[in-house]
Image (tube, rainbow, N blue to C red):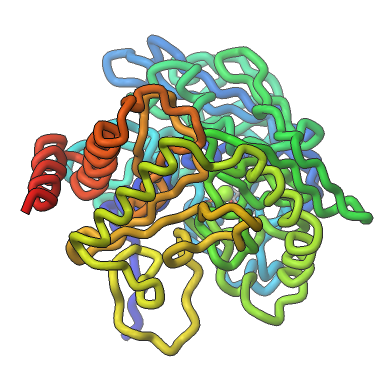
Length: 503
Ligand SMILES: Nc1ncnc2c1ncn2[C@@H]1O[C@H](COP(=O)(O)OP(=O)(O)O)[C@@H](O)[C@H]1O
Ligand SMILES: [Mg+2]
């Protein structure tokens, strides 16, 4: 007996929608990318053809008690027959498609075959504490492939995948019916995703969520309206502006603060950010993964090798022997890394704060022993010796890592310290808020940024006071790293470690 596996409501909501993406913006971008693809001619990337409208519509007839709905609208081809079959019959990429386009179509913008379900994760009720509530909510798909006439209307409610053996796709409504809401009498072909009880409260929030995920270069931007206003990506960094001879490799970099998100590898043709250099870590030459270097590096063919959660490159791309990867590395090593190094070393790391940090490192060594560099994994904990080469990781290299220090400069970018069994890397390259001395790296809890480039404005006068003050700042940050959701535990931890220095 052959049995067909079915997808469960729970799997749709929790694993394929909410669980998959790192940020709310990425969920919106899945829908926007679908809209883009539907607005372009087959397999050609022409973003200027697309007009995508995102809006929060009050009093929406499809929202419970006529509340707000999030409406994402494109004027593309609509859900054609093959698209309809793909949309409601398949999760993931069917074999036929895989044979045709190994790494997806539209430069990889359509590839994984699950992005549409990200819409579920934009409905607040699909994130409800109670699983039985989560699966009862979803979104509405409205679409038309002809210029005028009836509109296909499909409620996509995960529970129905199980209780009704699927989704009813053959219901059509009049373009003037109430359900159309703000789309009443819309001309032309279109697709719209309507999400009741959305997670966003304002248009500003939506833009903030997606702004860094939009095509980074203006000429690759499509017509995007959020709440009726046109938006584009934040400007590129320009301190470093290098373009390869053929124009396909481009680096646009600068020095940032903790708000910026490091350097990203972007897709040359679509301009989308594909992989965070902080995540790729040791696969890249220094200092491209340092958090204080920020900006974008464009290279051909990256989007089709993006991982499903949309934050790094698939391992098959970064393997040794892949020519495209080697070419990119060559560009980075020979042209980008040397000038980047100069750029972030512009402000020297010295002065009272830096000196105090050195003293602290010594105090930690005296109390808890020296961290031995060789056996530290990027997570910061000790690990058994491992003869295999290390996997790409989201962190810094082991202790003292970073670039060879310039002659006469004894300061390394990292100092590692031990706190009982754990190793933390104190990172000195970052400029923080003037009243923050130490802060956990949001991308790696074992890295503590410290503000020792001269910008810290609460440093005490005397050496002794500086030591005490900075010790507590570092311990507080480590406490927060260990107990991110429990400020009391974090403070208790910091003070407990402090007391151990008294013994
Ligand atoms: N806005 C849209 N307009 C037309 N077709 C769409 C739209 N959104 C999704 N589709 C169809 O649904 C399919 C599945 O979408 P998705 O789950 O995001 O997978 P993928 O984009 O990787 O193909 C798409 O390939 C496309 O055929
Ligand atoms: Mg998609």
